[in-house]
Amino acid sequence: MTSPSGYELLGYFNLDEQTWKKEYFFPMQRLINETRPQHAGDPNMLALLDKEQQEIEVFKTDPASCCSVFFVMRKR
Image (cartoon, rainbow, N blue to C red):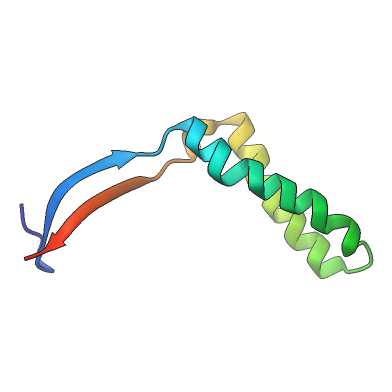
């Protein structure tokens, strides 16, 4: 199947929950934990870190709400 933009779909795959944990959420949690003490007096940075922490909490509560599909395509 060729898209209107001229790409042919060769295949696709979903990232599973374990990949999300290992490659995204665990490293993000580590960075939040390392960064928070360094910026304890910066309310803007703390607000940003809190927002990112909320994303982690959503994932913990409902991992199915975080998913990505990767498409393998080639230009026709």
